Amino acid sequence: MTSPATSAQRIDGVLLSQQLRSDIAARVQALKARGITPGLAVILVGDNPASQVYVRNKVKGCHDCGFYSVFDKFDADLSEAQLLARISELNNDPAIHGILVQLPVPKHIDANKVIEAISPAKDVDGFHIASAGALMTGMPGFLPCTPYGCMKMLESIGYDLKGKHAVVIGRSNIVGKPMAMLLLQKNATVTICHSGTQNLKALTLQADVVVAAVGKRNVLTADMVKPGAVVLDVGMNRNDEGKLCGDVDYAGVKEVAGFITPVPGGVGPMTITMLLMNTLESAERTR
Ligand code: GUN
Image (cartoon, rainbow, N blue to C red; front, side, top):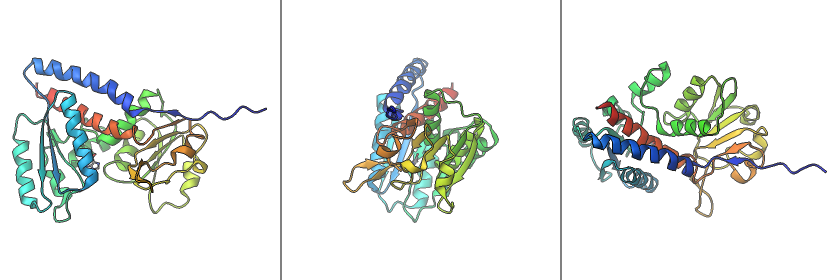
């Protein structure tokens, strides 16, 4: 009789976040003893419901770890000039060590202009061209929070990427591209797949690590995964019942993969944890 295949180990983003946030909170106390409180400014323009949830969680994360936070919620008709003026104020505010403008911004506002207006020293989202350039060239800089969180998850299972084939599905500036760079930095062989990729399944079947970051349900199904692979699910979607789900068919893929991140409770909380880490490190630099 053959033994039944064991299902994948779940990488718990809530648990790992709790551990990291307790370290962060301790470092915040040490900084406070020296008269510095890490400060994060979060800006939301408009009333995108998903963005409202993300932003609320970010502000709550700040509060829980003892940060100072400013939350600016603007109506969707805020002008680009008004937003840029507010960013300039925050750039010059010594109580603020990190500035985050939740994306997407309304169509009349140029997101690139907004990102480039944030001082690179306070770019805790890691979206500024200076941060992206630093990542590309191996210089120190803020890492984008979601890929940074994914790397921490791989680290938490002691995964050695050297010589492994990592397939990233999605090529956004926020996740796919920086994710690929971080995997490359750890000596993985990296393939970036996207909407124009032919025969995605042939590529994912070769992957030791798959990162799904498309924003569409069931991008990765069990038949596309090599047995034992590590699967990181960056997606945040709703299924037909309105329940939160990722890009990966979790129920199917967990029977094939070696490790898998759930949605919710996987990469999502790690994104916020790494935002707190970036803000803390920014504040520590002002010593
Ligand atoms: N929109 C989706 N993800 C993010 C993120 O990590 N940061 C910001 N600012 N906006 C986002």
